[in-house]
Length: 168
Image 1 (spheres, rainbow, N blue to C red):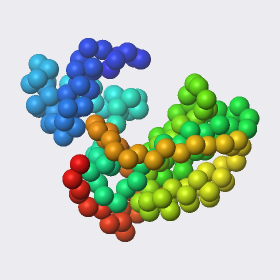
Image 2 (image 1 turned 60 degrees about the vertical axis):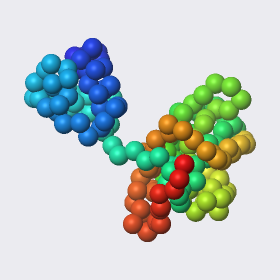
Image 3 (image 1 turned 30 degrees about the horizontal axis):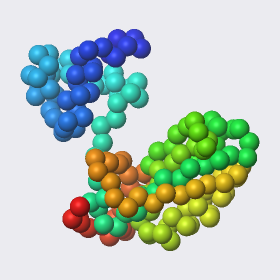
């Protein structure tokens, strides 16, 4: 990656890893006609710049024991950056973003306790953030092509959680 520029090779590298994040540098190099050391140095540059993260993703719909929901949040005051930081730091949050439209922030949340866990998230954890005028929760009933990176709060408790593989 050149200074602040994702070039054509970087884009191809990202594309290959998007297909298979376990693909070895040598195989990627063969596909892109570059050497393994070049692949590794470009990967390092992309990850150091926090542009790329290589991680294990989970299909939450195929994994019984996880409940996914989206929460649309309206703020009392227009403190978008501050509230985005506070909300995204909550342990059940997969991701959070500032949006246009009727909500100020939309959050994806994972619960390992079903509706009880979602209720606890909304009534305790999100409530403590403060400055929230209202929220609306959308529980995901079924999804396709939706892979998630488990939030740190869930990853830290994974050994205590019962998960099973279900039919989609």
